[in-house]
Length: 70
Image (cartoon, rainbow, N blue to C red):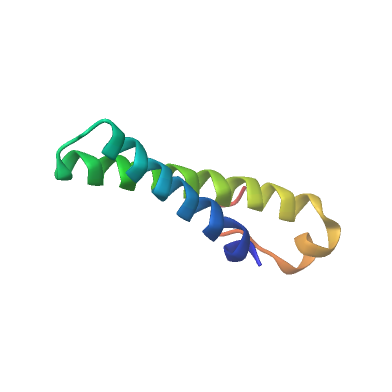
C-alpha cells in the first residue's frame, strides 16, 4: 500500500527533474544527477510521511512495523 502511494510521486519528481535539467540545457551527466537527486529525495520524504501516517492510524500501526524506528 505504501509503495502505491510513493511510486507516482517519485515518477513525477523524476520527470520534473528531467524536464528542468533539459530546460537549463545541462550536460547529460549533470542532467542525470538532477534527475536522480530529485527522485531520491522525494522517495525518502514519501517513506517518512507514509510511516508517520501509518503509525498514526491504530489499525495500520498494529500491522505495520517500520524498519527505521520512526
